[in-house]
Image 1 (cartoon, rainbow, N blue to C red):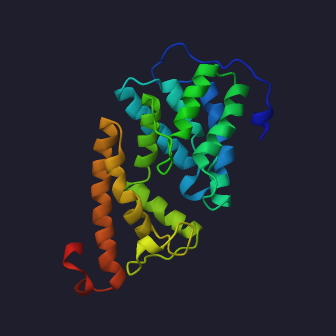
Image 2 (cartoon, rainbow, N blue to C red):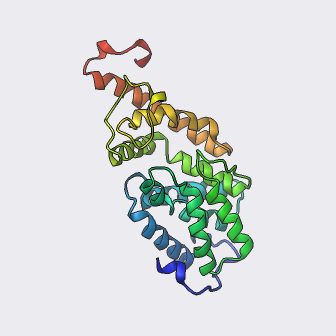
Image 3 (cartoon, rainbow, N blue to C red):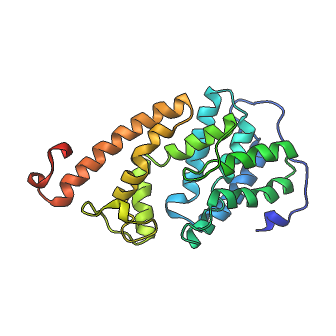
Length: 245
Protein backbone atom coordinates (compact mmCIF):
# COMPACT_ATOMS: atom_id res chain seq x y z
CA UNK A 1 0.00 0.00 0.00
CA UNK A 2 1.35 3.41 -0.90
CA UNK A 3 0.15 4.79 2.45
CA UNK A 4 2.84 2.82 4.30
CA UNK A 5 5.62 4.48 2.33
CA UNK A 6 4.31 8.01 2.41
CA UNK A 7 6.52 10.76 3.81
CA UNK A 8 5.48 11.71 7.37
CA UNK A 9 3.42 14.84 7.49
CA UNK A 10 1.58 16.73 10.18
CA UNK A 11 -1.96 15.46 10.51
CA UNK A 12 -4.60 18.14 10.25
CA UNK A 13 -6.21 17.27 13.57
CA UNK A 14 -9.13 19.58 14.38
CA UNK A 15 -8.85 21.46 17.65
CA UNK A 16 -12.56 21.40 18.34
CA UNK A 17 -15.76 19.65 17.42
CA UNK A 18 -17.77 21.14 14.58
CA UNK A 19 -21.41 20.01 14.42
CA UNK A 20 -21.91 17.63 11.50
CA UNK A 21 -18.17 17.26 10.87
CA UNK A 22 -16.23 14.03 11.57
CA UNK A 23 -14.07 14.18 14.74
CA UNK A 24 -10.87 14.06 12.64
CA UNK A 25 -12.15 16.44 10.00
CA UNK A 26 -13.45 15.45 6.59
CA UNK A 27 -10.13 15.21 4.75
CA UNK A 28 -8.31 13.00 7.26
CA UNK A 29 -11.37 10.82 7.82
CA UNK A 30 -11.68 10.26 4.08
CA UNK A 31 -8.00 9.30 3.85
CA UNK A 32 -8.37 6.77 6.66
CA UNK A 33 -11.54 5.41 5.06
CA UNK A 34 -9.72 4.92 1.78
CA UNK A 35 -6.83 3.13 3.49
CA UNK A 36 -9.24 0.95 5.45
CA UNK A 37 -11.27 0.10 2.36
CA UNK A 38 -8.13 -0.82 0.42
CA UNK A 39 -7.19 -3.40 3.04
CA UNK A 40 -10.69 -4.64 3.87
CA UNK A 41 -12.05 -4.83 0.32
CA UNK A 42 -10.13 -8.04 -0.35
CA UNK A 43 -11.64 -9.56 2.77
CA UNK A 44 -15.19 -8.71 1.74
CA UNK A 45 -17.93 -10.80 3.27
CA UNK A 46 -18.52 -10.33 6.95
CA UNK A 47 -15.41 -8.21 7.58
CA UNK A 48 -15.59 -5.92 4.57
CA UNK A 49 -15.73 -2.11 4.49
CA UNK A 50 -19.41 -2.02 5.48
CA UNK A 51 -18.54 -3.71 8.80
CA UNK A 52 -15.87 -1.09 9.43
CA UNK A 53 -18.30 1.75 8.78
CA UNK A 54 -20.95 0.26 11.08
CA UNK A 55 -18.40 -0.17 13.87
CA UNK A 56 -17.23 3.40 13.31
CA UNK A 57 -20.78 4.73 13.65
CA UNK A 58 -21.50 2.61 16.73
CA UNK A 59 -18.24 3.67 18.36
CA UNK A 60 -18.94 7.36 17.81
CA UNK A 61 -22.50 6.93 19.12
CA UNK A 62 -21.26 5.38 22.37
CA UNK A 63 -18.30 7.74 22.55
CA UNK A 64 -20.51 10.82 22.45
CA UNK A 65 -22.60 9.47 25.32
CA UNK A 66 -19.47 8.87 27.40
CA UNK A 67 -17.52 12.01 26.50
CA UNK A 68 -14.69 9.96 24.99
CA UNK A 69 -11.89 11.19 22.72
CA UNK A 70 -13.74 10.89 19.43
CA UNK A 71 -10.63 11.59 17.36
CA UNK A 72 -8.83 8.58 18.86
CA UNK A 73 -11.96 6.48 18.60
CA UNK A 74 -12.61 7.41 14.98
CA UNK A 75 -9.11 6.51 13.79
CA UNK A 76 -9.08 3.25 15.76
CA UNK A 77 -12.48 2.18 14.46
CA UNK A 78 -11.55 2.88 10.85
CA UNK A 79 -8.31 0.87 11.09
CA UNK A 80 -9.34 -1.87 13.52
CA UNK A 81 -9.72 -4.67 10.96
CA UNK A 82 -7.00 -3.94 8.40
CA UNK A 83 -5.12 -7.06 9.51
CA UNK A 84 -8.13 -9.33 9.01
CA UNK A 85 -7.07 -10.70 5.61
CA UNK A 86 -3.82 -11.93 7.19
CA UNK A 87 -5.80 -13.82 9.81
CA UNK A 88 -8.03 -15.39 7.17
CA UNK A 89 -5.09 -16.45 5.00
CA UNK A 90 -3.45 -18.09 8.02
CA UNK A 91 -6.77 -19.71 9.07
CA UNK A 92 -6.62 -18.00 12.44
CA UNK A 93 -2.93 -18.49 13.22
CA UNK A 94 -2.26 -14.75 12.90
CA UNK A 95 -4.18 -12.46 15.26
CA UNK A 96 -5.74 -9.73 13.13
CA UNK A 97 -5.84 -7.29 16.07
CA UNK A 98 -2.10 -7.55 16.70
CA UNK A 99 -1.33 -7.50 12.98
CA UNK A 100 -3.66 -4.57 12.42
CA UNK A 101 -1.96 -2.55 15.16
CA UNK A 102 1.43 -3.33 13.63
CA UNK A 103 0.26 -2.16 10.21
CA UNK A 104 -1.48 0.91 11.64
CA UNK A 105 1.66 2.20 13.34
CA UNK A 106 3.27 3.04 9.99
CA UNK A 107 0.02 4.48 8.64
CA UNK A 108 -0.53 6.80 11.60
CA UNK A 109 3.10 7.94 11.57
CA UNK A 110 2.88 8.60 7.84
CA UNK A 111 -0.20 10.74 8.37
CA UNK A 112 1.51 12.76 11.09
CA UNK A 113 -0.47 11.69 14.14
CA UNK A 114 1.30 12.75 17.38
CA UNK A 115 3.14 9.86 19.11
CA UNK A 116 0.92 9.82 22.20
CA UNK A 117 -2.19 9.73 20.03
CA UNK A 118 -0.70 6.92 17.95
CA UNK A 119 -0.21 4.81 21.08
CA UNK A 120 -3.78 5.42 22.25
CA UNK A 121 -5.15 4.39 18.84
CA UNK A 122 -2.91 1.32 18.62
CA UNK A 123 -4.03 0.15 22.06
CA UNK A 124 -7.67 0.33 20.94
CA UNK A 125 -6.88 -1.77 17.87
CA UNK A 126 -4.81 -4.35 19.77
CA UNK A 127 -7.45 -4.78 22.49
CA UNK A 128 -10.61 -4.97 20.37
CA UNK A 129 -10.50 -8.70 19.69
CA UNK A 130 -12.89 -10.95 21.63
CA UNK A 131 -10.45 -13.86 21.88
CA UNK A 132 -7.34 -11.86 22.62
CA UNK A 133 -5.30 -11.60 25.82
CA UNK A 134 -5.13 -7.82 25.49
CA UNK A 135 -7.50 -6.12 27.93
CA UNK A 136 -9.05 -2.78 26.91
CA UNK A 137 -7.62 -0.32 29.44
CA UNK A 138 -8.79 3.07 28.19
CA UNK A 139 -12.30 4.39 27.73
CA UNK A 140 -11.81 4.53 23.97
CA UNK A 141 -10.54 0.94 23.85
CA UNK A 142 -13.56 -0.25 25.83
CA UNK A 143 -15.90 1.58 23.47
CA UNK A 144 -14.28 0.13 20.35
CA UNK A 145 -14.45 -3.34 21.91
CA UNK A 146 -18.19 -2.91 22.49
CA UNK A 147 -18.87 -1.42 19.06
CA UNK A 148 -17.09 -4.26 17.29
CA UNK A 149 -18.92 -6.89 19.34
CA UNK A 150 -22.29 -5.24 18.79
CA UNK A 151 -21.84 -5.69 15.04
CA UNK A 152 -21.41 -9.43 15.70
CA UNK A 153 -24.86 -9.88 17.22
CA UNK A 154 -28.47 -9.09 16.41
CA UNK A 155 -29.78 -9.19 12.85
CA UNK A 156 -26.48 -7.94 11.42
CA UNK A 157 -24.55 -10.48 13.47
CA UNK A 158 -26.66 -13.35 12.19
CA UNK A 159 -26.17 -12.24 8.61
CA UNK A 160 -22.43 -11.93 9.12
CA UNK A 161 -22.26 -15.37 10.75
CA UNK A 162 -23.86 -16.95 7.69
CA UNK A 163 -21.54 -14.98 5.40
CA UNK A 164 -18.51 -16.27 7.29
CA UNK A 165 -19.84 -19.83 7.22
CA UNK A 166 -20.14 -19.51 3.45
CA UNK A 167 -16.59 -18.18 3.20
CA UNK A 168 -15.17 -21.28 4.92
CA UNK A 169 -17.52 -23.72 3.16
CA UNK A 170 -19.52 -24.63 6.26
CA UNK A 171 -22.93 -26.29 6.27
CA UNK A 172 -26.17 -24.37 6.74
CA UNK A 173 -26.86 -25.98 10.12
CA UNK A 174 -25.39 -28.70 12.31
CA UNK A 175 -27.64 -29.12 15.31
CA UNK A 176 -26.68 -32.77 15.80
CA UNK A 177 -22.97 -32.03 16.11
CA UNK A 178 -21.17 -31.56 19.44
CA UNK A 179 -19.75 -28.07 18.97
CA UNK A 180 -17.07 -28.79 21.57
CA UNK A 181 -15.56 -31.22 19.07
CA UNK A 182 -15.65 -28.82 16.13
CA UNK A 183 -13.17 -26.15 15.10
CA UNK A 184 -13.15 -22.75 13.45
CA UNK A 185 -12.58 -22.48 9.68
CA UNK A 186 -14.05 -25.98 9.15
CA UNK A 187 -17.19 -27.34 7.43
CA UNK A 188 -18.78 -27.45 10.90
CA UNK A 189 -18.13 -23.76 11.56
CA UNK A 190 -21.76 -22.86 10.95
CA UNK A 191 -23.67 -19.77 12.02
CA UNK A 192 -25.40 -21.90 14.67
CA UNK A 193 -22.01 -23.02 16.03
CA UNK A 194 -20.90 -19.38 16.12
CA UNK A 195 -24.00 -18.53 18.13
CA UNK A 196 -23.42 -21.32 20.66
CA UNK A 197 -19.66 -20.84 20.98
CA UNK A 198 -19.40 -17.07 20.86
CA UNK A 199 -22.39 -14.89 20.01
CA UNK A 200 -24.63 -15.99 22.90
CA UNK A 201 -21.94 -14.86 25.37
CA UNK A 202 -21.26 -11.42 23.97
CA UNK A 203 -23.95 -9.55 25.88
CA UNK A 204 -22.20 -10.46 29.14
CA UNK A 205 -18.85 -9.16 27.87
CA UNK A 206 -19.92 -5.57 27.22
CA UNK A 207 -17.89 -2.89 28.98
CA UNK A 208 -20.06 0.24 28.66
CA UNK A 209 -23.63 0.99 29.78
CA UNK A 210 -24.84 1.73 26.25
CA UNK A 211 -23.05 -1.33 24.93
CA UNK A 212 -24.86 -3.47 27.49
CA UNK A 213 -28.23 -1.96 26.61
CA UNK A 214 -27.84 -2.45 22.87
CA UNK A 215 -26.40 -5.95 23.33
CA UNK A 216 -29.41 -7.06 25.40
CA UNK A 217 -31.78 -6.04 22.59
CA UNK A 218 -29.73 -7.75 19.90
CA UNK A 219 -29.26 -10.91 21.98
CA UNK A 220 -33.00 -11.31 22.38
CA UNK A 221 -33.48 -11.14 18.61
CA UNK A 222 -30.82 -13.82 18.05
CA UNK A 223 -32.51 -16.21 20.47
CA UNK A 224 -35.81 -15.81 18.62
CA UNK A 225 -34.12 -16.33 15.25
CA UNK A 226 -32.23 -19.49 16.15
CA UNK A 227 -35.31 -21.02 17.79
CA UNK A 228 -37.13 -20.41 14.52
CA UNK A 229 -34.22 -21.89 12.55
CA UNK A 230 -34.44 -25.02 14.70
CA UNK A 231 -38.08 -25.42 13.73
CA UNK A 232 -37.61 -24.84 10.03
CA UNK A 233 -34.48 -26.95 9.60
CA UNK A 234 -36.43 -30.11 10.48
CA UNK A 235 -39.32 -29.30 8.18
CA UNK A 236 -41.87 -30.10 10.87
CA UNK A 237 -42.53 -28.36 14.22
CA UNK A 238 -43.40 -31.77 15.74
CA UNK A 239 -39.72 -32.72 15.77
CA UNK A 240 -38.68 -29.73 17.84
CA UNK A 241 -37.93 -29.87 21.54
CA UNK A 242 -40.29 -27.94 23.80
CA UNK A 243 -37.67 -25.34 24.65
CA UNK A 244 -37.45 -24.37 20.97
CA UNK A 245 -41.06 -23.22 20.80
